[in-house]
Length: 155
Image (cartoon, rainbow, N blue to C red; front, top):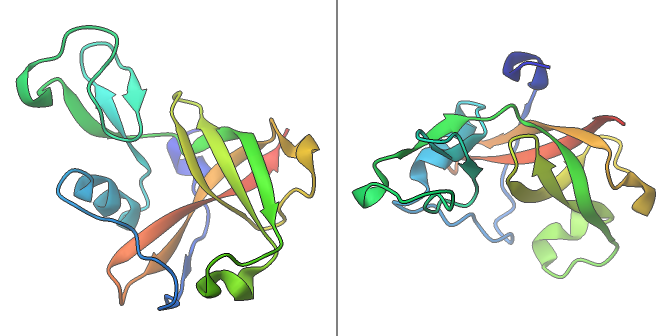
């Protein structure tokens, strides 16, 4: 599956002010800009191709000063559920209207792991570990950010 076919129709929503906002800073602003463009970017080594999330130096070899060998590059947006849990209690009042929801650690095809919620028809049990997922985007234009979520696409 290509990057283009991994994308799906995405939604625009209003942010619940009770929820914590993402921490967008100088080190990750390019990642968040990519999400607004519906690109899931990974911090990638131009020397060996290793991909990382969150941003760090490449661990495969010595790095150039100031991470000059690293850049944000689009990922496929595809991966597998590595671990997951189903929340039946809202630990923050901002999530009360989403109960129950499934939160997963997704191992991307490029290697890094990223955590997010599973949307659509989420899996109900631990048998879901290993299921294929793809990124979908939820836009919050009034707040100026987009969040990545994942949906199950098969085994």
